[in-house]
Image 1 (cartoon, one colour):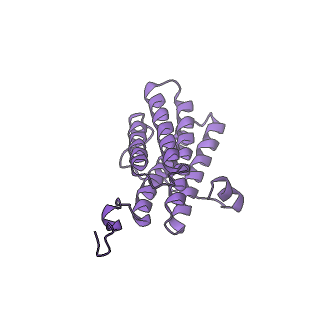
Image 2: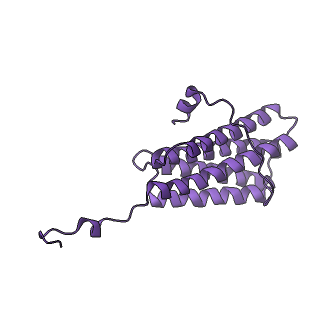
Image 3: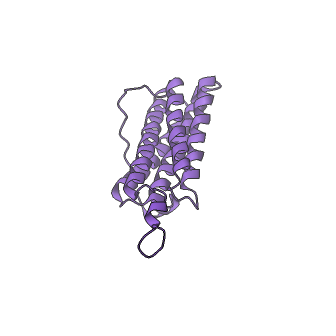
Amino acid sequence: MNEHGHEDHEAHQEWQPTAAALRADHAARAESAAARAAALCRHVERHGAEHADAVWKAAHAARVAAQALAVLSESAPDPAADSRCARNAAAAAAQASQMAQLIAGDAEPSALACRAALRASQAAAAAAGAGHSGRDEELNTEAEAAEKAAVAAAEEAGWIRPGEQVPSVATGVRSPEVLAMLHL
């Protein structure tokens, strides 16, 4: 209690991470998903030449993930916007995973990797969802764990090689229409 007989508000307020701390978490997930999408794009290009549509979709997914990461890095910390960028990168990586599975066929590791990528996308969407706006610690932790699982599953499927240099991906033109589509 303070000198006025009121409980000290700060003593009873739960610790909330700062926008900068949340940015670091969301950025790490976005960077991982964008790197995963870029590596999957390279994998699809190398092994799916006969699937021109899959190659195009994987390249587009890698570009969208790179755009989400670029937007995140160019803006001021904002947990809601940052979590949407992480969500968009994870969704793009899930699209790239579907293309990698398409060229891999029915191989069990590929199916598992694709499901893990979809779970990472869903967890990132939940963390960014209305009412949470990237601030819910439990949802952010779940999204981080799902992203790590997606990376591990992609490695197990042979889509990503640990330690291999991640290919750079041009973001292309970021028009207002594309940014609006990404909810940025």
